[in-house]
Amino acid sequence: MLETSLAAFGIGEIAVLILFLSNDIRKHPAARVFACMLIATATHLIHPFIPVELWRASYTIQTAIPALFWITCHLIFSEQPNFKHWLSVIATYSVLVPLIGQYHQESTNFPLVFVTWKLPEIFEYVLIAFAMKDIVTNWSSDLVESRRKLRLGFVFTTGGAVLFSIMAFNLQIVNDNIRILAMDITIFVLCWPILHGREELWSVPIIASNNIHAPTSTIPLPIEKNTELDTLNALMETGYYQQENLTLTILSVKLSLPEHKVRALINQEMGYRNFNQYLNELRIKTASKRLIQEPKTPITNIALDVGYRNISSFNRSFKTIHNMNPSLYRANNLLASSS
Picture 1 (cartoon, rainbow, N blue to C red):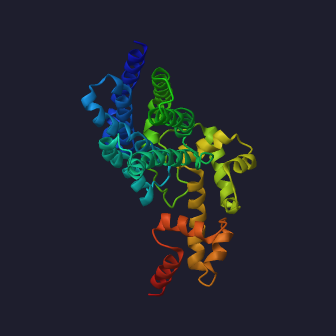
Picture 2: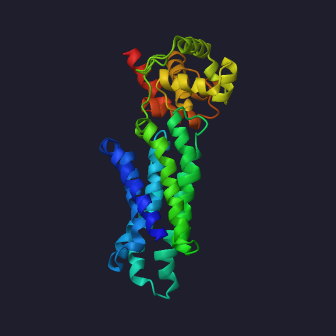
């Protein structure tokens, strides 16, 4: 009776959450993947109550939870989602290969059991680990408040619940009531940050325009904040952004402002979602001018001057903004100016 009530409560939570996200699901890939993860979670909750002949289909859907969790985290928390091929292969393997294993559950052939059951289980843990990596990477430089809260929620609830459920499912070491209760709590805790900041969560990061100081927010802010914005812009115009290892904390101390205020200024007034993105825009704009104005200056020197620690990170940031490497950018502009 208790197990049934807990499962029903969790399914009700999922149904309500999907209903509230229905408009987002139509618009945003991340919301669609998240909805698929919720559906797979609902399947996990109802599994003990469905006919035995449907168990294979249920297992297949449940095995997709780690892969969907990884995809969801990568789409929401990565500034520029780029799915590595080998991780995509692992995700596909962890979902599809257990289908074969279901027909050999009684097999004593160790290689077959390992390939169809044990290896997919290992891959599930790998996917959870990389999802957690996406969550914690760039956490300190994240400027979107709702996304920062969701990072915390995912770390302490979803990640733990997914890992908890997988261990319960694979190792059969946890009571079903405790497992279902953990999932119910997870869904409940995540509802608030998702429903209160979902548009910011699903949005695809947009590279800011070349006019780096032009506010992109349509929400009017108090005059006091505009004064603070002027102070920030004035500091950056002195070249402060070229300081190596500059962080949001260091900048906040320099401006004598709380870190959350500086975060809100850059996010709400300028439209940046990540502090590193803001710095890269400033640094690459300066570097781009110098590449043309100083054709004989080595690119490495320019990269170090504007605040990068090495040429590879400079090249990566430059290509993200200009869709070409610095050498080609310099060559094209010099050719255009001479013709």
